[in-house]
Image 1: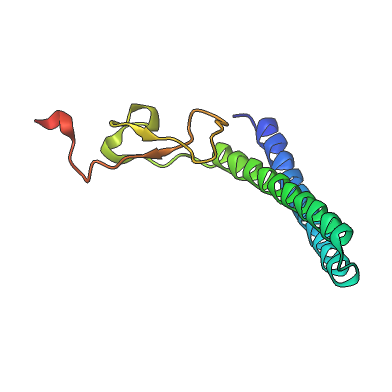
Image 2 (image 1 turned 30 degrees about the horizontal axis):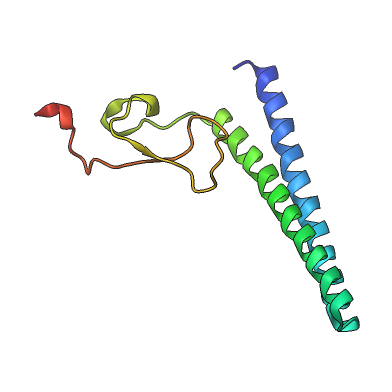
Length: 124
């Protein structure tokens, strides 16, 4: 990567971290409103508004986590990759990979490598 690419990635990482922080701040504010609504309106309408606001809060939490994950992904792009076991790249590792539990694929590098416990099955 060129220096300008690194600078762009760094700006994107800082932006995603700032976005995650700000969205988390909004989550805190919405949860405060949820508590005030629950304390002030103890009837079915208050319950309905509390549930709607709590759903909004959950959605915002997922958005904040997505922004934080973007920053982590950018960090992985910028940092030099460590050498995996057996001296092979991740795409050359042996064995099946477990899928993500969120039922969505962001890129081909998601999932867990099943360990071979230090045994190279190609060795015999």
